[in-house]
Image (tube, rainbow, N blue to C red; front, top):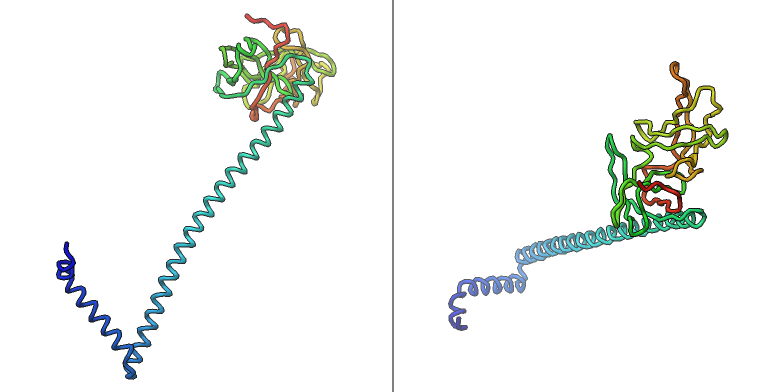
Length: 266
């Protein structure tokens, strides 16, 4: 569009703007008292309008700054959480390596990458397998004691049944008196039952229970737990003994697979 055509097209707007401009100039150049009042009201109104615009601009600037600060706080929280988790993991790995260096067995560290828990099976999936020398029936332990045994193995993964599995059994002894028994899951919670212990046997609350060593799967002396309660059944030959496991199964993250033991691979 040519300049002449643009001016012609906008002539009404230009005429109105020029009229307003001339009126404003006349108002502010007139010293009449009424005009001065109008001028004062105009200036005051314009100042009020500018204050509102400034306040609105400040609000949006403050809102943007708050959003930025919230984003920075979220990033800092995530970074602190990551660093805190790394510190906890570092402490766990230090404890694991210290335990491995003190152990008389050949141990393989396995990280738990999955869980399977229902009314029939209580097991975990480990990130180690045949490539690391892990095979079926190898004992699974932590620095606190026996955790379970390997049930099935692939090249890079293994499934381990835990001590809290309903089908798990292990021969044990009372560390103080050497009285033997069989450990199995209590069917509820994380407690164990020490069975096959005849009545009037010398066992007490607080006694330590360890593996007997007569099994071809589990080395002797592995900690199972501590006797929590003892009661005599009215019928039968054996006592009812509840054992609190040494391993906290709710916090398992890494375990050891015991390689250097005379195990039954069948």
